[in-house]
Length: 84
Image 1 (tube, rainbow, N blue to C red):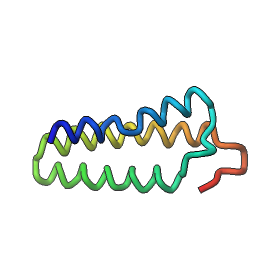
Image 2 (image 1 turned 180 degrees about the vertical axis):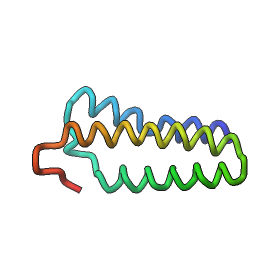
Image 3 (image 1 turned 30 degrees about the vertical axis):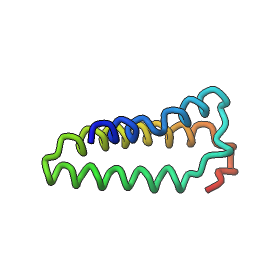
């Protein structure tokens, strides 16, 4: 469980680094970011209901990582041209 959690938790870090280096989100889908964020949030709530530490920790970190990616998307999208 922890191995899968580590891969999931840091799965979006390469995308975040690319956005940071290029200051471009032209190849990033906002809908995908929002969909994954909602999915991680729901998994987190499920983990809390089960009191499962693996689910709680991994989905908290994943949700925060996706929040950073979404924030960077908003920062670097072209004015008025935010493609979904």
